View 1: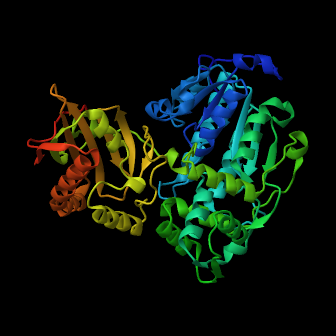
View 2: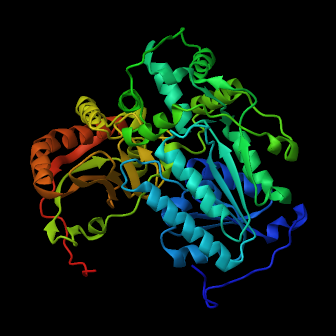
Length: 529
């Protein structure tokens, strides 16, 4: 579709930009809160560019460390909303396209990816963008490839089919702290002394370090000859997945794992098994496993001549990733890319689009303690710290969620004490953080409805603090009603236990409670669409 004259916001750019002039030019990163985007933005800033970091959630973007940089601008935009995308690209020199669907259960993901790519091409042409840079996947010489690999290849074709030159980088397995591939290897090898594996453990792949991926992505802006071309990128060696398991085992200092490949483990069964033993949900594990069936290696190495660079071996990449995990310095994670759109009913407490009431239960406790001390313990909830009481019940809920294909509790958290909007927290995601006052979580477990968990602190004039913990649930159909009333009896036990455990953890005296909060959730009437 062609743009009208009123849509076109064309800017003329030089073909080559000197290092001294980079600060005058803005680079747009679509998908800045994702795993690769979270590493790329700081590198672009370090290289001297201005950066416009784009994601669906402005609050999530503002919580990223790069958001405070003087040359970084954070902008909320949706690739399915052409107007917002047009404004996000307006005035930019180049744009990185780091957005793709990996959730096989999210409907027709290929159609969504196709629409997003088409909108980007149209907006890029409408704003006079000089370049597009896309990170796709290595495509094997095999007609029987996964739907996700086909979709990523199609996105590359769409982005390259417009009038704006597109540089496509095709990578296979990316190794780095927090990457889905590294987490898959990590949890399988850590937890399974004996590994019954499918035949794909003998499949060859060419893993690449996340540092090398970021080097190529950021550095191509300095090489105009890469514009309008596609390049395979991979590490220095071709490995098998069994070899990756062995290298991880050695670098982690583990006893030798017994690996037994068997022919009866299908990709579907393998994805369920991977989802069972790792924090990666089945919906994400399935496309990962489907892609592991094919031999995925580089077909050409032209990029190494254009951009000479000492590539990291898989051993070095795994060693670095383990160091980052041990030091709790994981810059970005595969779970970062989750959506954190605030449910409309959560804002006012009522299911406006159905007219139904949101169920809620809450407990209040008054503590002889300042709010700062209590707040630090609330921020540390989940992960290795647990949920402050009745961890067995939380574990059972996590196992049940994992069994039906959810994320479970093992996803944990990125840092043991720091938390920001958009962070994954076991089977929750952070919706809102108001320092010293409020922590709001939305459930990402498999539920017949939507659930929120809220912690609020109110410091009284006496210096004492009132902690209120509230669970809210918007049921979906009869199944949602049955779910709520089946778990409701456990709320009293769990919330009272959490409140007392927090008091003990904070080493303070309980003045009142825990007592059940009376009254209904606030209601409002939202306008109909």
